[in-house]
Structure formats: C-alpha cells, structure tokens
Length: 160
Length: 160
DNA sequence: TTTGAAAGACGATCGGA
DNA sequence: TCCGATCGTCTTTCAAA
Image 1: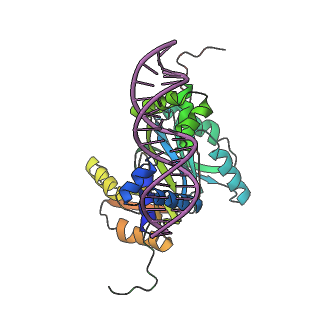
Image 2: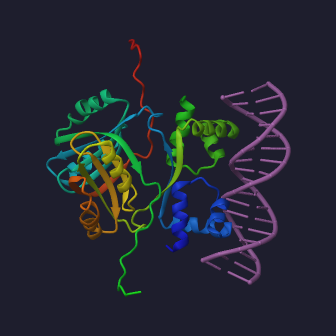
Image 3: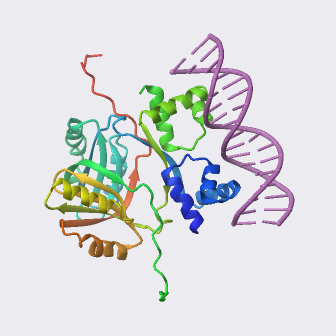
C-alpha cells in the first residue's frame, strides 16, 4: 500500500469503469503497470468488487428508514438467526450489529410510508425475539464519495 | 423500466466491470442492444455511477460506528451547515438527516477506538449546535448485494 | 428497438531493462 | 517492479430490418 496504490483506489472508487489506459494516464504510469497494480490489489482483497450505484427512486424504493432493534436473549443463536433472516428480506439494504443500547440497526428502503408501516407491523413485530424497535425516516443522505486511507499513528514520533 | 432493464441493473450491481459482451450473453441479447440499454439507463439517471468497494481494514479504518446527533435550533441554516461540514470530515462515510428522535446519524470509520474517542471529543463536541450525541460501535454489517425493484401497488386490484 | 458487421480501442501477456 | 510492443478481444458505431 504505497502512494500509487492509494491513488488507484481513490480513482476507482469514484469511477470503477474507466479504462485501464485512462487510469494509467491520470497516474502517469504505463498501462501494464497499472493493470498489474490493480490485479495485486484485487488479489490481496483490498479491492472487494465493483458495483453499479442505482437510483432508489427508480427501483420504486423512494422511502428509506433506519430501524433500531433490541432482541432477547442476546445469544449468538438469536443474533445470527435474526441477522440472516432480516438480511434476506427484500426491503432491507443493510443489517448492522451494534454494541451499546440497541442490538441491530436495519437500513431499509421501501415504496412509501404505507409499506414502511406494513413492514414494521406485519413482518418485524411478528418476530418473537424482538423486545423493542424504533424507526426513523431518512430525509437526506450525503455520501463521502472517496474514502482515503487514514494515517497510521507514527510508531516513534520525532519532531521534523 | 422493463424486465430487461431490471436484469441489467441487477447484474451490474454485483459486478460493474463485467464486459458488455458477457452481460449481453447472460441476458440473451446482442452486445449492441445491451450497450444501448445501459446507456439509456445512465442517461435517465437510473444508473448513477460505478464504484469500487474497498476493504476498510486496508484503508486503516477497521473501527466503524454510528453517531446519533441532536442539534438546536433545528433551522435549515443549522442543518445544512452541520451536514456539509461533518460530511466533509475524512472519518465520516455517510451523513443521514433523520425524522424523529435524532436529527442526524453519522456513519464513521476510523483507525481504532482511540481515534473514535478522539473524534467524538475533539471534533464533534466542539460544535456549538450539538445538543447531544450517542455513539454505537458496529460489530458486523451484512449488505444486501443486489437491490431489486419493489412491485408497484396495483392501481385497481382484481382477483386473478 | 434490435441486430450483425466493420473499425478502432482496449486488455492481457511477455521479454527486457 | 516497471515498461513498451504484440496479439486477440472488446467496445462502439452505423445501416438495415
């Protein structure tokens, strides 16, 4: 992970479909070098995949919400079962397993508020392990388009 | 948005870098047809972009957390200013503006717990508009890899 | 809209620096 | 590790159905 790798990663985060030649040109290296770098990053698992970002409104999923959930008992069996079954529901974008007050946070995207309510009442509240849940509709979201590596703490800091 | 468009979108979500020929072959259409469909989807804004997914540990961001924030006064000026400035911080992956109990939810990824604490204490709590915040460390997350369109409610439901 | 064919561009490989 | 040349494949265009 040197400067070049970081630059490659940053460019591919914002546009994963640019040609290898274009990427190489931006970085000032030969296309073959660039290709080998990208392959090495993929082989090492740094690049985990390439995904198209789709407009949720076009998918008829204009309403997003977070649902914070508490389950009991807090055993591995209950956690894994809940995570897997909820994660498989089409309304759910992401399941987060949390430390602290809530046990799970579900990010969901549905057609409209009626469907959100139906999801909460008909699907979630049917689950016996759930002790409580709170839902919050999402008005807006702002993504950071490019995630840069954060600096590692210097092992032995010296004045420069 | 017919069946073909949906199929294209689903394939490109899981692998945005597959060749146009391969995508066309999977769908049983000519490459030129496939290319035109993808272009139309892009032109209409259904496909919003293509992004590489990067391993957060490789970016030295192994610790993720959510931070729920309340700000006051809840005016547009305060909301927009907070959203923009927090959204620009390197630690922040996404800023969500919420309805309900909390005003914002910040998804952050930092080096370790020390840096999470430092972020909360040194950067967030400095902001005068913040009334309160709660943070929850993320143990796991499970993404739904492919988002399918949800069915539109039938306009005039009839028994089939 | 969809298609097949043609032309130009690109990814992939390899030998050498 | 990086680069430049080569080969085979792909994207892209376009005229026709």
